[in-house]
Image (cartoon, rainbow, N blue to C red; front, side):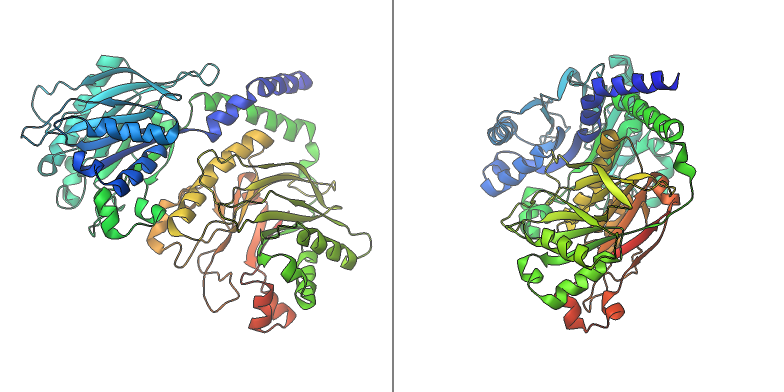
Length: 572
């Protein structure tokens, strides 16, 4: 019976494997953005238009608010500019002009027609005249990219009147109920500039906001976030989901375009006084396909490989950023001697920041390691592609003891959204010995770009890398490690609430914020180890290896080796 089940699951994954990968690694990316007083004046500023075009292209669907243009030419012009930059990838919908005064506004949708298509659209019939700018509702359906997958949902935007924000938010319950009547769907996304903070919605006012205490409505942008470019600290812009969308949504946050594009405060304000709020939606088909994957994994692990519970034989594993590792460093005998001794300490070590266009330095290091290894001990290597957007490219390299473990699969993560400066080179390792509890695991390395928004985006992007690795390797047991630049000037204390891996219990962080992973006079926990799956209960001892004190080096001698310490842990 078991072989038949395994065969069935194998055939299922062979048939639908590419669909699983698409559904997991390429979810819908959706945003709401109040582009302050968007019209012909803003479209006449080339620098502003360039930023707006770049922002729109981040998303599969973006809802633009505060379109104020009596001639209705600015929004179509923006869509044309986006399509000029994206080879015609986008279509658009523009709602009617709404507002009680002469200063009327429109809601505008820009979406990738390859991924989404509108099924129905209408302006909410505001019989009680609650809204200053009544929502323009659109029902979207995913295009048929995945077998059996036709995800469908309503989008309900709102730019609330500041002085009437509580009443308008409460009336969204009526808009939602009406959308169910109009479309037959309970799955909806409500979003926009709800003016839901600071002087417009006081702390005590929340008890009167029905959507906040009604279980069907999930709020994704918390009150402590700041969605404004200005010096205020207000969570005006929100995302709320209902129905099946809530189960498929993840990764909500704020896109700080000023940091991402290196804009000054004034340049950012020229674009808007708000940041876009954003989140992802997985395909609903993903759950079915992932379940099949996990069934296969369970059968393989517990039926085919019962030795999983054999006697422990610990592996010592490390991640080490060897600053600018290349021929120059390999030309320094004393440095090489220390590097060899460090590598010999471990069963598996990840080396980062390999910068060597000739490709000779890393193999030379492995050769030196094998020359110094004890009798019967042999090390081998894997090295990824040269990565980076500039001429200063890097590689990830793994060195491992062949008598303890070996690679079964490796691949470069397909970074379809361009999130990573250096996309992870993922390796699945399996023990070559019969002892040890954790038989196999994925190693997901990352050397994050050391700028605040890039590091935040890259750490958040690791969610997708992890999901993709489950599909490819059929295991959720992973090590995510490397120089994440996760401290000090790069990641401020208040930034942590934007980092989803930090706030998701799926991910267990072994290196604390108070650990100094640098050999310099700084005190920064840049390098981290994060565990998932059964690795959480089968690993321990996350710490740095202070090679300077261990080998009796001065600070200058240590810095010749690297400005980072290795971070290490043990797997049973």
